[in-house]
Image 1: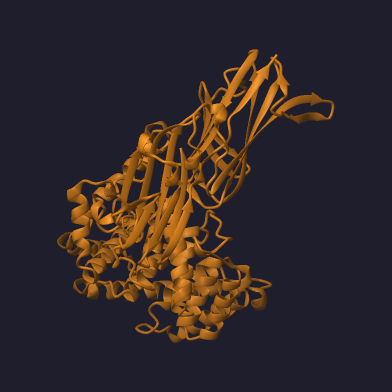
Image 2 (image 1 turned 180 degrees about the horizontal axis):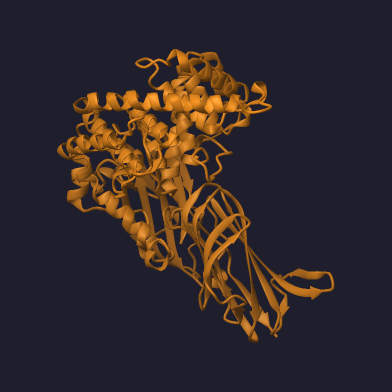
Length: 604
């Protein structure tokens, strides 16, 4: 299967040359050509919302997430009454709209989801999407909002804070996190009027708690021996305090007894801003702007903009978004915070729309299977810039070869305007390599063409899209100085007993989830390792499965960049053997795939 992906960030015309289709000859038996197109990809972000309420955990964060998701759902329905009809149509039609991307397009994938470690992930995401019509039911939302606010109030301690679970000590970070979500909802005007009084009571008590905690922390710091105020960099929890507190300054200004400590943290955070990552800088910038220090906030915006990257496909983003263990080291949350900063502080609508594009492009290849990523991403997409859900995305002209696709006659999904069209092998002609797409509206859209054919493995050529595989073979020889690797070319003879090192160099231009890498193996070769299992090498983890005819690698999360996979084989039998190919595919987004060329070996 060869694939060709494309995407649009706005109206425009693209001409795509899928030259592999031109190469139909006697060595190739055409199987199928498939074209798919999504007119408005923003709906995939909304589909992630039910994930927030599916947890049965009794933690206060789960309650907060359910409260947030129900409030956002209520806001979406109130602002877009027609949206409820979309979800009901998805449910009634029993279409692929409510299937996980892991379960869709089985015929276009190199492996069945049942043969991967991600079957449960697929079922979980599908179950989550199946609930979407019920999730947006107005009566259900109103009932659950009452329940959620009652639970948050009951779990709030006398001091005004919250513990992670009942019986644990109050947590400053969790309390600030809940206030942050309440601040988001107030900013969006998404707190239901029926529970506004209870919400205000909770907020007032929580602000008193985090103010006291901040002051106690400040007093402990300045009492330390050899404390130097000019060299001090506020902790991450203090920066998060400034941000959470800043949502409520109009109704609840900082009291006099807290002002000295708050001013000190603000001053030091700004002066030491270069010691923090981009997420923390955005928190500082937003807080300073709300505290009335707009020029300092703009300094941070200008600095961050200098380090940004822009492209036609991905929009505006930052290369230094590295996934880490801490709450401020997550790529999706980082981008969402940048959108909030550039929208609120810089009022830069053009940059905001470019950044929203990057966020949606991540949803194309990732599940957003954490509540934090979903909360932040949906907030950023819905609270800033243009309303991404209003346009249908079906105003497009598509010509494949000499055929014009009439979308009005195609069965498209409501909302996403997704459709798929296939041609059998005998219906495929070389001129179908030329694809012209003329898009008339400004929605974020994407799609792909899949070309499936049969041919001898030895005749398969290298193919790459946004990802590329280079496969190399080395003969391993023992010397006094250690191992020596001798590259094996096409004409190199092997002999029984030789040790071979297979090296696969994988390059990806984007972050991907649920990646399957399969390396076929000649019948003469036997692996030195026989046990499958999880591997963790050089900070990178994956599951390696050793089978009779191949070695498979399952990678849950692949950051963009270059990776090297190596494993050893022994030559067991003489003769001439086909070694097959190496294939790469994202099971979540199968349009991103690649394969190496076929190869043969002669063994003496």
